[in-house]
Length: 467
Image (cartoon, rainbow, N blue to C red):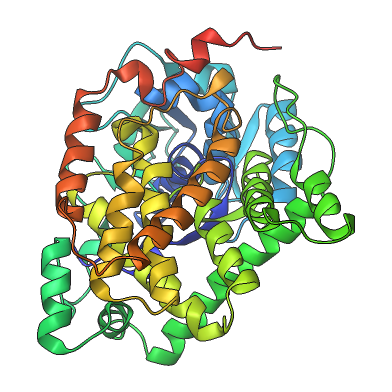
């Protein structure tokens, strides 16, 4: 599986990479396939069935909205968040949908978008089945059209975390399997460190060399800096919005007030840096909860941690530079690849240790790289970041990516900075390896009850009264 930095970091819209971005991509891919195989014009009816975690928390995560606009051709990377609500209002008012924006058919949402909460498909908790129906086409223009409907195509998809999707029968996302083999493939942290030692490379240099298999160095650097620009834009929007977030919880945005306090509050205080980290993380995840544009890092639910720690580095570390941004994000992506390959970044499989825990591990490693720590210190920081998130559950109140998700990003960002500082004070040697902790995280996720894995059937989700 040839993963790229731009697989781990994707530009998309909130509130969830697995429940919003993945289903939107699946819906779009399904109708693109109909068009490619000349079935779109014959399609008269589309039915979408959501299973498992998608059915249980899909409404709170915007899965229904994502599927509808995806069928209309929206792509999460390029879709205008402000265009989604008007599109949904049109579909729901007219009971009609425009497949790929041009082939209009009847679509009564209650009958055609089904949430099967007690069923699941075999390969993953986030399963979907798309079915296109149409009448038999007449063999001659003058022949009468049959009124009998037939299945034109039925396809299963799984949203496996971080915006990745696979079709039924596939084990890996196609974008990761169709690439040429890079010069330094690695499947474990031990292999990664060994390759760096053997070739005299810093970790970020190895990642950059791999990326050059698929793009020029200038393109890779420009792409990484574009990710940073999107992250900065998300923070800036989050600082200047106001009011409450969508949904029945009526959660009030906190980042704008915290930003005002920090910028207007007079002389600096010893813990202002921590307050800024909290503000950065809250701003991103409040934007995510509102359906705004974010960078999956590696998921939407954990999208605030990497930007918050990178903002911390750029604001508070002497000598911070553009090169530091590149070192940070390339290194963080490599750590994300290890979790993706050897465990999962899906909250529906791993609980929140697979989202916030992985993001904390990635950010800790990235910060050490930006501070020019050794490869061994980077691996140590990544290990510390996950070790103290093991067992973290995913129990969103009301099925919304708000409580405890938003605040949890602030906690994860602070924890990542501390993990980096602990690692930088050592020489990189430690008892528990990153590979050990990833294996432990995978086993912990397998052992964790499904009620704590993005189903809103346990934990805070059932012990907090919605209001």
